[in-house]
Length: 420
Image 1 (cartoon, one colour):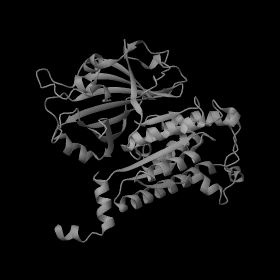
Image 2 (tube, helix red, strand yellow):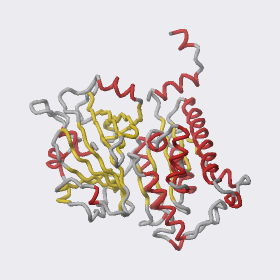
Image 3 (cartoon, helix red, strand yellow):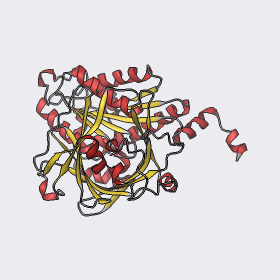
Image 4 (cartoon, helix red, strand yellow):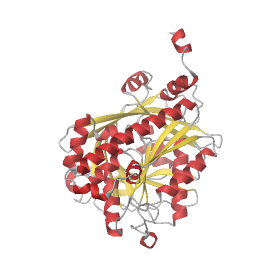
């Protein structure tokens, strides 16, 4: 075995280490409707990350590559060609992303792959029947294309929705949508990516420069860089479990089964650091389980004293191996989660099955700085009792605190409210 390892090139060893989580590698998607600011955002993120020591490659939008090399609107006069084109886009997208990922991993340095759109964008341009046909022909599920490939998804809302005076398509000859069409396409694209555990929607409630800075702060937090963002979610206690009939027809939602297992912290510094693995399975309206994603989260204090969470998608085998080092002083947390978008904000209802059966907590993904109070537009179709604030609520309703088995040591309960 040693001889085999020593025969690997430096690049091959680097890839192996990245796949084992020893070298930070992040793959993220920037998506959104026409004229949302993706091109400028990609350039800003590339500079920001490179200046801070990351290797960065941008994966270009595949449809634009095809359109700028001869694919024209005239092709669509052929019946059924939309499905053929999206199949071609998917082929190139997956191959290009995977190839560029390997190049970055082979460098052996912290790296980020910035993807200008991703595979799920194609769903916005096809009927459900045609999209499902493509997936079935490839033996894929939406979980494969959406949840297991990316660390985060950032949706840049089209200027047509909220900043119409700035809507223009001069910099993209592949696009020709009117403002009304752009708004429709923007919402369709949001629905396509809904369900990813780390999806963020950046609307036009601020000026464009602030919109870009919000994005930079989000990415900085993802990769473990210092940021002035003070929290990732705001939480509310619900009086009752929401049911399907509670959701208006205009609100799309996904249901997941979640198992969270806290692990023993090696060389525990006693500062609130924690580790957990999570298994997240999508459940259809008919109760069918369609795919599972496994993730490892490690949270440690930075040099500035901030608790920084680093997340990594892992395999089922890694999940099983990590499970053996679970913290036996804590319950395995099991929940049903319902995620949806409302007024450009991402929400998830956490419905506990173990411990605290029946407890329902609404999480709103809202970013704010230390000087700002997060603004949440609460869904009017949910029965919200009150906002959860302060350490008392954290100890009573945070999953980290709830997981402690009665009678077990309750040390390290510094950070339960941050654990989601």
